[in-house]
Amino acid sequence: MDHFPIFLRVHGRRIVLSGGGEAALAKLRLLMKTAGRITVFTPNPAPEIENWAAEGKLALVRRAMAPGDTMCAALFYAADEDAVEDARTAAIARADGALVNVVDNLEDSQFITPAIVDRDPVTIAIGTEGAAPVLARAIKADLEERLPAALGPLARIGKRFRKAAEALPFGRARRDFWREYYFKSGPAAMTAGEKGVNGALDKLLAEHLTRKARPGHVHFVGGGPGDPDLLTMKARRVLDEADVVIYDRLISKPILELARREAIMIDAGKEGFGPSMKQEEINDLIVQHGLSGAQVVRLKSGDATVFGRLDEEIDAVDAHQIAWSIVPGITSASAAVAEIGQSLTRRGRNSSVRFLTGHDMKGFADHDWATLARPGEVAAIYMGKKSARFIQGRLIMHGADRHTPVTVIENASRPDQRILETTLDALPHALAAAEMTGPALMFYGLAPREAAAARLRRADTEHALYTYPIQAQEAL
Ligand code: SAH
Image (tube, rainbow, N blue to C red; front, side, top):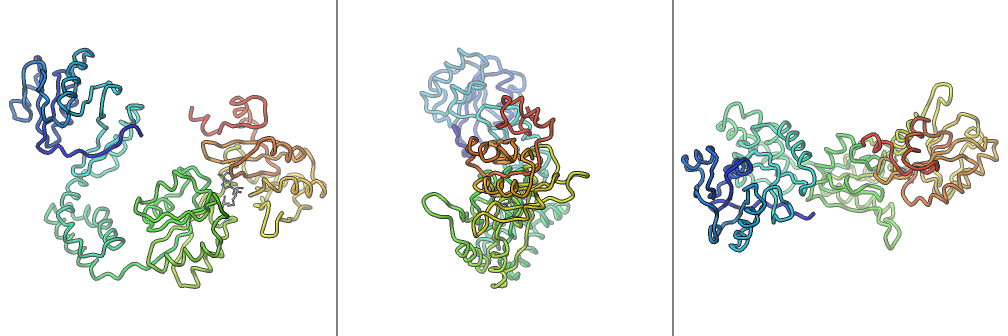
């Protein structure tokens, strides 16, 4: 982040602008929304500027800026649309101690003006550090559409009510009250005007003051394979409401970013210098926070019900009569198969699919190899990297065709996704050569669909290891 976003108090402070044309007009329209005192220097003001000056919205000085003109100014805009004049006025303002913005000149600016969604007092500032103004405008348009116009008045009325709301205990109780106001009773009462909203607030507060505290709850949430777009809406919502998030090693950063900033974030899968947290310790943590009345999100990768040691955690929570629920997620097999353009089952090929783990508590996991070795069988193998040679040996021993396709998808759905296309015969060697360090899902009996493989191949050479995610290619 080269530019740190803050909200600057400009109430009653000087804001100076040099320029009288289009660029000046655009900036002035924005600046006049503030409670700052605006002064414009220009020998050639556009008629709009003259009108605003006549209406007392700004002070107009009909000459070029001179040293001392920006004394005590908080902000200065060089908007003459002339590089030489902009450099001259910017130097004056800098010497006078104002923060300087040169319009359309990121390099010489000390601050930038974001795209703004204005629901005063709710203000959303969008910045791209000058990289993509078009993107900023698109995001603004999207937000403008989504945020009700009444948000501003609701927030203003709510602000006056903050003191009264302090009667509610800090934390969840107060948050629940405000959430209900902004998203339910507030907008509903808006039709009756400000009076109606005030009445609704009184009623809501009275009701919340007598309400019993919400008991603790544990959501076992499937966080999907890593791409935040692959989270369910429900997962997003419970993450947003969580007081405590206990997450696994494979949970990606962008997903953790979705939790509230005040939420307690606990990494239950730290590997760093020691072994990861023991299962009993994780159980204890979940129980402890659940009993304290917190809304706990136990965030697991993929789907929580697939190789997630979920039952042990549910038993622990149940033993203390804490309420819980499961929020399903996209398991890595689903995400990975999408990346190779295949389906997990197919008429005439396989009418069942197995989810296998490469190793279990006792080491390499044993399975019904004889059945799997039959032609057309498909298996999604989790945690299979280390046991690839063992799996290969067992399958071949039970008569599997050595040329059966095997595809390994590392970091499925993430920007660093890689796809390894190989055969049962070559699997251990190909895996070792690929040096995969991320989580990888192995498909036994599936190759990338021809069209998908062709597209992947174009991104790399004729090698069987593709580093380009299909999805990303489509987006290009
Ligand atoms: N509950 C998870 C699986 C947990 S076991 C799920 O439903 O996906 C951990 C294994 O999942 C890893 O060893 C790897 O085989 C697989 N896995 C998890 N995330 C993955 C990803 N983004 N890409 C490929 N495999 C992944």
